[in-house]
Image: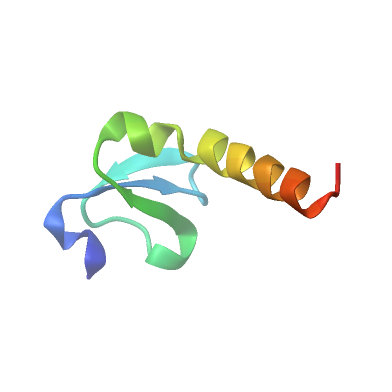
Length: 59
């Protein structure tokens, strides 16, 4: 499994950070290199989505 290497993930099902193996990858965002990066997964996705919307002219 991809999480066996000790990476950090953000679980969308439980809305929490996970380290290493955890919930199925279909329910997670990541992997991230640190706990703090995984904790910021939703904020990062929001920022990227907004940037893409602006780029597409959907503002």
